[in-house]
Length: 194
Picture 1 (spheres, rainbow, N blue to C red):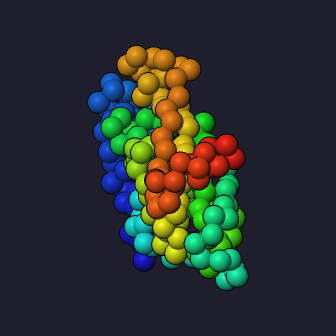
Picture 2 (picture 1 turned 135 degrees about the horizontal axis):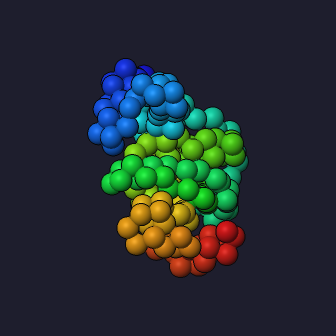
Picture 3 (picture 1 turned 45 degrees about the vertical axis):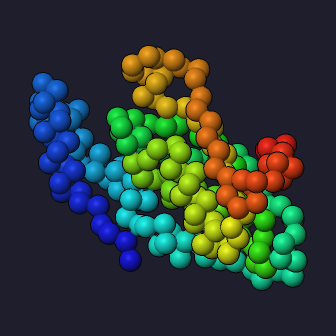
């Protein structure tokens, strides 16, 4: 299960990037940089080693509940802090707050697992929109509920540190599945709860 990140290749390419930038990879401050970056990439891109199905299996800890199927009982976990790296510039997406809601379908997921799913999905080269879709898909796999909503608000260094350089801009994305797509009252309950 899961693939492995090639740290030797990362070290080689980081060394090449340092040279391409006109610096000396053998100077004191940079000597161990390729190894440090490879180690960091193993951590911050750990989610790339797993498919959504594998992540669902990793965090598939649910509890059977006698909750009526078709009810509108709502479970919400909000303000989950994550970070990610955008696939366009490999730039940091930071100060990201994820809120996840679902309507239980006979079982509920351990609350910490929702945060772990969001964290692992962020540890990929990503688009903020895809993070929401991936979380919703994994939540549906684990809980058996098609009724899932995800809202993400975050800052993108590809906008704040380069290009247009708008430090205070935030990106907000919303993913709505199942009844959240059609039921305006349910959408309002979700948005008011977060």
